[in-house]
Amino acid sequence: AVAAADQSVFHPSRISYQQLREVIASNNGEASNSLREALGLVGMISITGVFDDNVDHDTRTSMMRELHRCSLSSLVTRKHFYSDGTLRRTMASHSVPSGIQTMNHGAATADPAGACYAFD
Image 1 (cartoon, helix red, strand yellow):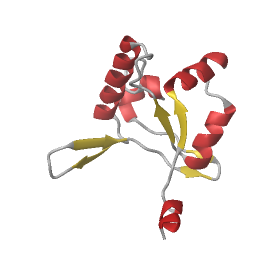
Image 2: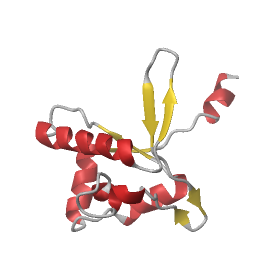
Image 3: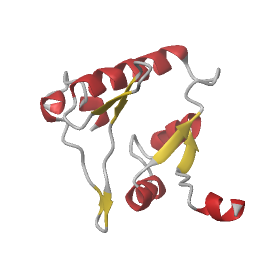
Image 4: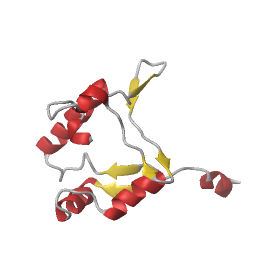
C-alpha cells in the first residue's frame, strides 16, 4: 500500500543553483535544450541549493529581492492566506503539447525597469 501511495506523489526534475548557473554560462546566457525540455514536459523544475554557503550572498539577496518584487506586481501571481496568517504567493504556468506557456506579467515586464523584466 505504501508503494502505491508513493507512485502518486509528484517529484519535479531537480537542478542545483550552481549547475543552473553553469548551464546558462556555457550557453551564452541561455538555458540548455534539456532544461527547456524538462520545463516543456513537466512544467516545473526544482532549483536546489539557493541558500547554500557557496552561493554568493549578494547574488542570492538580489535574486530573492527581485523575485519578491515581481510577485507583488505580476498579473499571474496567486495568493493564498493560511489560517495562521501566512501569505503564500505562487506564479506558475502550464504545459500543453506545444510546450510551456509564457506568463503575461502585464505592465511588470513592459520595460527593463519593470519588476518582472528579468524573469521573462
